[in-house]
Image 1 (cartoon, rainbow, N blue to C red):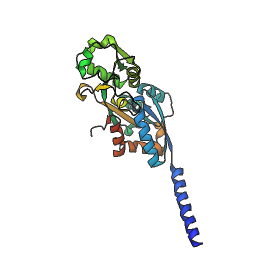
Image 2: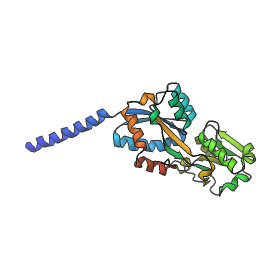
Image 3: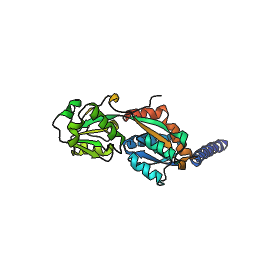
Image 4: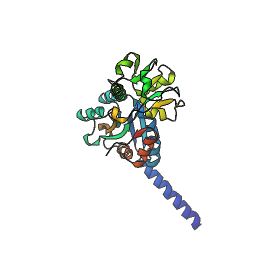
Amino acid sequence: MWKYRYTATVLLSAIMVLWGAAAKAGEATIGVASNFLETAEKLEARFEAETGHRLLLASGSTGQLFAKTVNGAPFDVFLAADQERPARLVTKGVAQPDSQFTYAVGLLTLYAADPDLVQGPDVLSGPFRALSIANPRTAPYGTAAWQVLEALQVADHVSDRTAQAQNVTGAFAAVRSGAAELGFVALASVLSERNNQPGSRWDPPQDLYAPLRQDVVLLRRGQGNPAAESFLAFLRSPEAAEIMRRFGYRQADP
């Protein structure tokens, strides 16, 4: 009889611990730049398993998410594809000033679905039909792509064959669909587990374009939210850094 009472006590204690953890768990809505979505999904799964908190991911271009945030979208955290928009949210009083930091540095690649097409930058001087890039005016990866073209002195040569997508995800989709033979896309898209067309690529040296620093910021709505604040801390962890590395990002320099 004592044995059964002891077992019941242990089970009850375990249930109370689990209940207590669940009671403390929270929920946060994260605005995620489209280029980082798949990586964010992997981070989300690991974070939720370790903390019990729940994340809700809402994806879009950095410009779109910025506009939605300013207009009152219920985001707690903003994972941008640049540094400018989080800083502007701080200036507008929509985000907590001391919360902004670079969570990842994106990498650009020149990609073709054809496994033999891209052997280096010389392909840009050849007779291709269309080059897809993200809109340089609104998308950081598009700005970086144009910087590479100018550094290689081929911007004028390709300008009439350049097709602009709304964001870097759209640029990648154009290459995969065959609408464009070439595209400057996020390395993360090519390394994605969902990409069944590894194709061919050339990774421009990083001194040809400004670092694609992607900043995160805690929004005013997320202040005091344990899930949101815990997620910001998780993004700085070695575990998160390793997940991001596998998906085509690197850590920011100290």
